[in-house]
Each structure stands twice: as C-alpha cells, then as structure tokens.
Length: 145
Image (cartoon, rainbow, N blue to C red; front, side):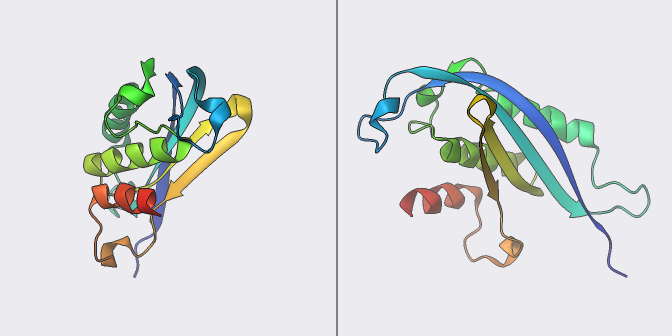
C-alpha cells in the first residue's frame, strides 16, 4: 500500500529594501524602495504511518524562519546571490537554501501583498530523477533561461 503524501506549509513575513540593477528592463524600479514581503514554504513527503506526520514541523519551521530572517530589514542587493532581487530571484535564493535545510522542500512562494503579486517556484515531481538536481543548479538554470 502506498503511503499518503502530505504537504505542510508555513507562512513568513519580512520587510526589505531593494532596487533593480541599472541595466534592467524595468527602469522605473532602479531607485531604492522597500516592500513588505510574504513567504510560504511548503514541505512535501510521505506520511510516517506510526505517528501520521512527515516531520517535527516546529523544528523545520524554526530553521526556515532563521533563513527568512536573514532577509528581514536588509538591503537585498547587498546579500550574495540577490544582486538582482526580483521576486523570482528571492524565491530561488530561498529555495536553494531551504533545500539544504530539508530536501523535501517542494515550493516557495514570495509575495508583495500590497501590490497583489505572488511568485511560486515549485520543484518538478520527478526531481529525484533529474540529471542535475543540486540546489545551486536551479538558480543557475533559471538565470540562464
């Protein structure tokens, strides 16, 4: 019998400033400005049939919270890997580091609620069979596209 698959998630918030690089296709956003960001991190895994869970959720949430807090009240452009801090790149940055915390991380959603914007990055179902599935490769592949 197959074990049920469970997805659990946690929402986080952070405040940060950023600007888009001067050579961006969005010239109106090259000046420093700030946003209230939301983040949803989803973990997906098989159910432990003994206790009905996939993880000690509080333990994982604490580690993800520490990760998101690295972005809180910062100038995102100064963080290595976020020199171009679009929502997509913030999501990829969180995904790459979140996968190092727990490889069952399935998706990251970054939002700017005051603008009504969301960006969800979800790993493919067959990621275990992907030829090159190291976390850093997701960022490299996405930026090269």
